[in-house]
Image (cartoon, rainbow, N blue to C red):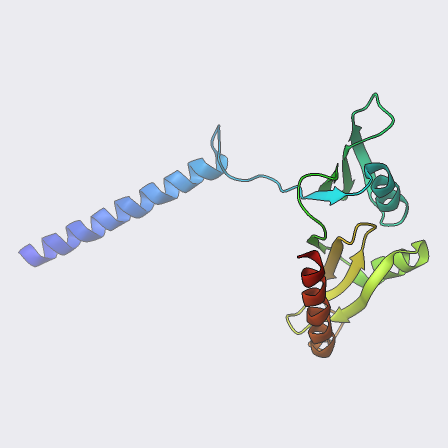
Length: 179
């Protein structure tokens, strides 16, 4: 009998502990003064904020949200966006070049067509990867790589293994160049 009551007390203690952890996570995620992350905005180090704004808005389909300093002609910081994704551009500061950013889209092939027509620097055309995504690589003016992925083609899975191997070699080379 005593063994059962000890076991029951342990189970009750575990239940209370699990409940307390769940409550703490709920407060963490939803409470006032929450410490849960709510968004992420990468900051890209660029040679010219003005040239990058022009490239991202005219070639890559982004919108300019704002630039700074607003009163001066020579901008040194800006925010651009596409859909719900925001990116900051910082002129010769905050980070190093090149960075890689992964974006999700609904139709990689359609975006590829738009980018090709606009003259974007497509480093790798869309391919179905073995991990179940269709991806392409696009490079901006400063060598930052936009890795853009979405759902695989209808009925296609894994045809991109060879291309991925080639892309990894290219990735290693670009890392070495940046070091």
